[in-house]
Amino acid sequence: MNWQLLPQFAITGLLNGGPIALIALGIVLIFKSSEIFNFAHGQMLLIGAMTTWWFSADEGLGLPLWTAVLLALAVSILLGLLIERLTLRPMTGQPLLSIILMTLALGQFLQGLTILTFGTTQRNFPVIFSITDPYRITLPFTYNDNPIIVILKQNLVWSFVVAMVCVIVLALFFQYTRTGLSMRATAEDHETAQSVGIRINRVFGISWAIAGIIAAIGGVLIATASGLDLSLSIVVLAAFPAVLLGGLESIPGAVLGGLIIGLAQGLVGLPNNNFFMGPEVAQAIRNSTEIVPYVILLIVLVIRPDGLFGQKRIERI
Amino acid sequence: MLSVNNIEVVYSDVILVLRGISLAVEKGQIVSLLGANGAGKTTTLKSISGLLLREDGAVTRGGIEFDGQRLDKLAAEEITRLGIVQVLEGRRLFQHLTTEENLLTGALIHPNNRAEIRRTLEQVYTYFPALPQLRNRTAGYLSGGEQQMVAIGRALMSRPRLMLLDEPSLGLAPLLVQSIFEMVRQYNEETGVSILLVEQNANVALQVADYAYVMENGRIVLDGSAEQLAQNADIKEFYLGLTSVGERKSYRDVKHYKRRKRWLG
Image (cartoon, rainbow over all chains, first blue to last red; front, side):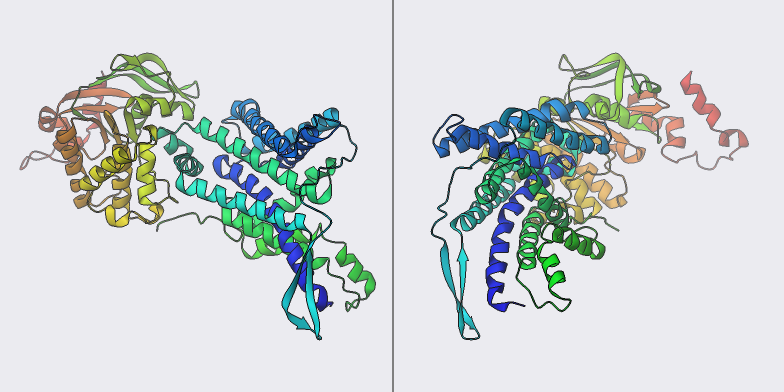
């Protein structure tokens, strides 16, 4: 085990978990309000990032970056509202499974739409955070008398900060605003919500609009780190286990799940040549970053079927 | 104020549940709707409050009017906004929200006027003095009686003009039932809000109501002022559990379904 590098990989992993948590939150939001697991969320990320690129790049409109981000957010809100109005509302009353499969089809549709409008080439995503001078942090302890220095890309740190700020803003929004209250009420019981006069279709619309915003921000954050091409939509594969780990409808659960997944992916990447089963196995483990979230998910679900923070079904005896 | 004119309700296009129900609630009245399980009481309430549409039910004949406005095509949330609020059967709270959050959801239909909402909340707390201590408790863990108070309190928060109460006595201890009905009557007297009360517990219902209807098999079989009905021999026997004291009961009296059938004619 390379203890010298452990803090570096752990912290990088944890920070990578920030955007994953944000993406997970977008899925949780939709699930909470309408019990629909949104398989199209990855494509919403992709479209958020793609439109940001298009608004800002020279091949596109060539607008200043922040204007481009704002416009992309507007597009994503519109996309969220359209998805709700055109695909989900007509399906109200249908079995949940059909609606969930419909989101799967919707995802493929959006992916195809992106290919048709933006093509398949890899794009140079505008640089938001400086790449050249990373932060160097010397940790206050040593290993074998060597100081432990953690080198963090600016982009990594700030992506994490942005993601966490979004999470906190959303949490406050749910807790303290009237719209937040009506969304939480609708999430609990649609019929009762209607009986107190909450316009639940409007609440669904707002949920999808917010999910659109979160997806666009998440897409931009991911694209600044790993570049922009069609495979961006596959990033959600890391967020799905985060959602399930957290228990599907809990905001703190999604955040914690995202961080755990990030941390695990970071730790697995740790160079580890003298692994007791030989270098080939060690290499195989290093290459398993995409599988490890699902391995963790499997273990957690066996022990706690509701996830870590799954809402306890309140049953009075 | 509210008039239901000869409505017929069909579920899933085939199941005829209400066969021509007419009833009226005047301003300031407490009207009670009595009947056994499956008589169609809850369906009647849901067709007034618009929640029928959620369950694939529809009013196929007749009409419902509230102050001259047709209700039968409006969505449930719009009907609530007109001032008709339904307290659903089985005290359906938002279980994971706190008591106070539950109450506040009732005021969501009004503009965000903090002082006004605060005032309504204090008013609800005066009707239910037990609730202020519970304001930060998770609603799902309250006792049945407390939950019923929150459910009614939530309805009061919307400052309704007509309140539809569906079996508030369900599963509660007799003493609690008394105090909840006491509160309902007090609220009605102080604010003049009309109440349409669905009950199986005819005894308490007839004590608070001004007027009552009796339903069987999707029809109204009997109606009259609460005092009249409380004196009615059939009501006494089938709903209040009283028989004339000292008389010998004959087999003929036990075969009461014959007498019930007479009403249907």
